[in-house]
Length: 258
Image 1: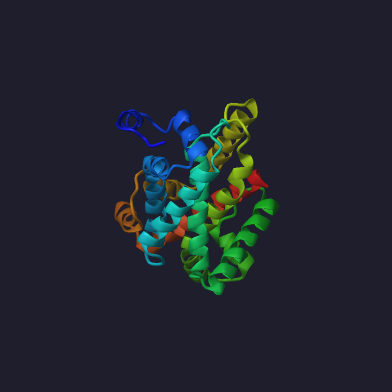
Image 2: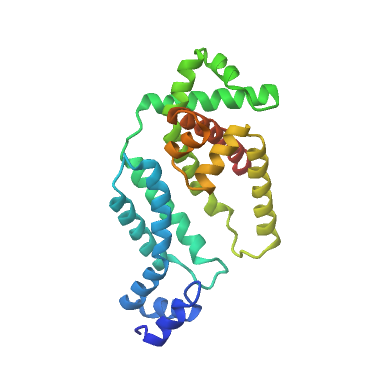
């Protein structure tokens, strides 16, 4: 069954694809119908790719990232069960993001020394947080690692991109298990609220500069160079502050998901 012009016009005015069209595709596997569905949701790939590319622009070609995301979107269309009360956007976003992360992971662009440094910082942070009952200061983490402050800040700056990928991996690898069969159950509402509370508490624990950097990057869409201009600090210092904030947020998410 092909998609006629009236159907196309109707879908273009809606937020997604109707159950009738999903049913038609599942029964016929019509290529034209599949391609139409693909076009309706291609924005998911472009949005996720643009967010990830701003971080990995020196590590991978944007066209390659979009290509692997588009393949994941096609696979999601074939695997999606429209009879379940789950939005396709949610279902597909997890898989598209996961495919892009797998692609970046296979590039093997992160040196072993940086990965080891990140693990050492994470371990020191977790140990001190447990011992002190609060978020440790940079000086305390540096002392735990037995390095001077200059070396510590240099290491934190180097782990910046790795931290972002680590959080993406953490969420993508576990989010699918947090989505129940129905999105409108009391359990789903409770899980959503709990996650919001965890993230809110983690953000509240950040320093003023850390909150500002996170806000400017994720909500205002500014790049590190632009944030440096706003805060009148160096770009490397922005990366250090951003990375430290991500370590805190990652630790909070790990406690919630585990």
